Image 1 (cartoon, one colour):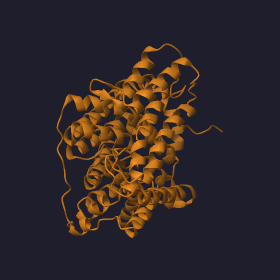
Image 2 (tube, one colour):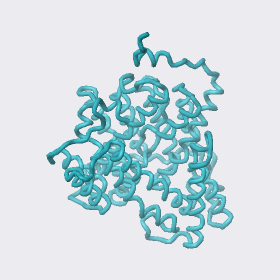
Image 3 (cartoon, one colour):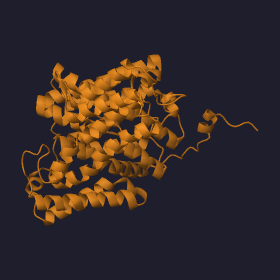
Length: 429
């Protein structure tokens, strides 16, 4: 008997019966809960408004589903890959120009979408192979290590001010970190999807008992408040600084789309098409920047929740988006988020930033990049030193410069090039 084709196999995936609206809303709340910890942590670290982040994540998810025809059960939220560039750009150019750079990063996604539509995914293999993306992702994580240590020690992210006494801060930070690790490793079911939530909750309670939580801000905040939207300003310096940073999240996006496709047993690279998913991400990111929110990308945490709950209905993500938008207008909610003490976030970031670096290392390992080969050694070595050391050339520095240097070295150096896969990009994740 003949084996069924891949398309037939996809067609044989059981269709779920229509769910009542209340069950979809409940499932949407659950998906938002899974994404919530990392979603709000990003703006809290970078100084953006968490209520704006909630609003733009919901709006970005709606835009993505419109562009992709509502075919993919995916939620959009802020990517940790942008944390270091946003912090650096904010200190150097100010918030408005940083948002202008993020708008340009979204526009780059739109350009990549058009290139994929015209030329397919082959050029990504050549332009952004593992030896380029792996070290860049490692730079993103490792360059953030001092920020995590400063915050865990009770200092501001740049280490300039001691906000909480060291002994108190390190106790809270290590307990928050320990709880997050314990839940991530030993919890079961849905709880395993939300280790950050547990770490923040325990750290917050401990901080309150130690008297370092300022609840007066929460008490003074109104129940209903319009999020503090901020309009971007545009400068070539900030744009050129931010554009190269979008490279790593672009590859991360492809991996997320393929991952959710493997869970639902559907090839989203072909339908609705990678060009449409990239376009959705790009428009969502640029829209968020217009309102003062962080970049929006496909969210891998939600992929795990979809796998666990078997909720394949994309409408569930629309409910999650709607609930996020509603929460964005609850003033006391945002004030409570902003009252989370620095050591709580610092302890959790010790794990999160290290995890980013390990993702880059795993990229090199999975795709068997031979670092004893001089070509690969040069690309990885120079990229790591430029990025972590904060090398600057004109207006481009740090992670942005590291990304550009990695691409240029890969294009000009002779030798064997390791692509994402021998057959195709679609089969390599």
